[in-house]
Length: 234
Image (cartoon, rainbow, N blue to C red; front, side):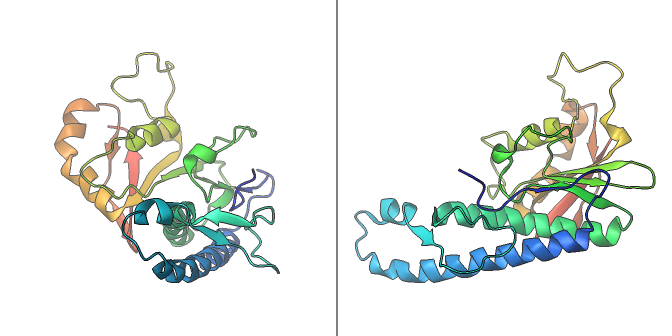
């Protein structure tokens, strides 16, 4: 099954303007959010608490006939509401991150963007498979961003933070076979997270200082409801 929201891939010879990508992402998000709101409004028909959770979990958005935004796949006639909610939340972080990058990294262009979850990435390209992949054409320097919407600030049961750090190429304390003479910090590296998880990272500064000797989180930038941390060498 194809992605509901298509990945964005560009050639390194013709990277995309961030403003162009933002426009397409906003259009796709608005389309999905509108359908999601309409579908949620119909859930009042579920009148019994006995099977409320299992019923809500199985509700799907039905996509109407007609034209769709450029990034929305035409191969989907319906999609589970709960999955669309999760994808919209991730897209909201992506949009916040790209709005910030458009202003703060004005000489960077976009090579790749994953509007859906990281688990749906493909390895079909030589370009590193990060959620957002930017390039500065004049120097060739890269900016890599990993995006998540972990809502529980007290628990990262899926170890999403450390998976994303590894995806950025960062060495963690428990990695014994890290390649010698490799430094990911030739690139600019960012973690893009929810407000709740951003506050968690800040509260754990003593943990990182003591237990993670190879990197540091810099003070976050807050854009909308999103925290953006640049990661540098300790």
